[in-house]
Amino acid sequence: MATAVNELGGMPSLGEVPEQMVAQLIRPERYGDPLSAFKEETVATPLPRAGEVLVYVMAAGVNYNNVWAALGRPVDVIAARQKAGESEAFHIGGSDASGIVWAVGEGVSNVKVGDHVVAHCGVWDPADPWIVDGGDPIVSPSARIWGYETNWGSFAQFTRVQSHQLVPKPTQLSWAAAAAYMLVGATAYRMLTGWPPHDVQENDVVLVWGGSGGLGSQAIQIAKAKGAIPIAVTSGEERGRYCMKLGARGWIDRRDFNHWGIIPDWRDDAAFAEWLKGARSFGARLWEVLGERRNPRIVFEHPGESTIPTSMFVCDNGGMVVICAGTTGYHAAVDLRYLWMRQKRLQGSHFANDEQCAAFNEMVARDEVDPCLSRTFAFDEVGLAHSLMHENKHPMGNMAILVGARDADQVDV
Image (tube, rainbow, N blue to C red):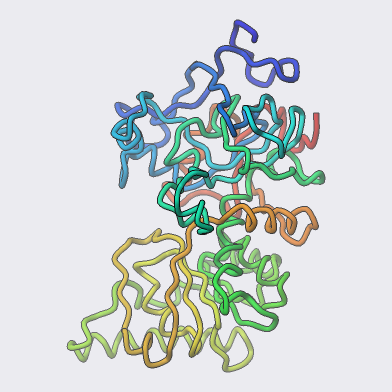
């Protein structure tokens, strides 16, 4: 083991683990604006335990979960981990990474030192009784999101992961692009394929909220590759045309409607009638864009509070609204008459399991899905990237942070 911290971007000899590393840390006293919450510090390099792998990080992805970590709400991730018995008074975020296997712990056989890999963010206890009994690991009580609910994420020179998190890096991608897609892409893949009989089928109409964003950009491409017909909801012509380049049949500008928010009380006849007028108008626009009077069999949801009532209304009879987040809020109400009388399904979905991550990664490797990398930041701009995301000023698609990689186009070492 080397005795000194390695200079950022200056790769040590393969397998040589410095005692210390540079990382972007969040500390409780800095909670607030992401621009000032993240600060570069030097900490001890974590070593892999049994079943774990140390990865030399080439690039890291940017996701909204570490905006929350920087704000310290709705969950204080440091306090939560300390309550569970962990000692670190800091958080190293980052739930996407591309890099090189640098060291392996006892019992690791699926990767070896020198492998080029992408890490997914699902971690769990393999001894969890739920998993031992054959349950889906990402549903298990022990499931956590690496780099948000756990420490030692990808905003550092080295990251420690469970070995099952690693999949082969698609050879055609730069390190930056390879770091940008897995969290959002695997989440979208599970949403669209993981809930039979509502797994996406050929000729299905799929309504994709936030089509030009990280999740939506991946969902459009997955649906298109499966033979479905994605329709995007976004804001503005530039974003709409971007969605169509990804494979959307067309797009709806959400700014053309003003009925968003929690559905009015059904006993308030005037307010409910006004909301229903807006929802029906949205449905009519969907038919216009599609070119036929057919409702979506799958509605790909993540805004939540503002849009769930409309999603449930326009979803086809016997169809599914599948949701993975609540970016506009968590208080979502639906008119239960549409849910039960039309036998629709409201399905929660959270990240993905190993098999789904591997299947999605193969789609990327086959060039069926592009990571949609829109902007790459330097390591000292981690706070800036998250600040832009917090203020909704980030670009379309996905973002990445250079760590060990020298430039955004670097493919190999």
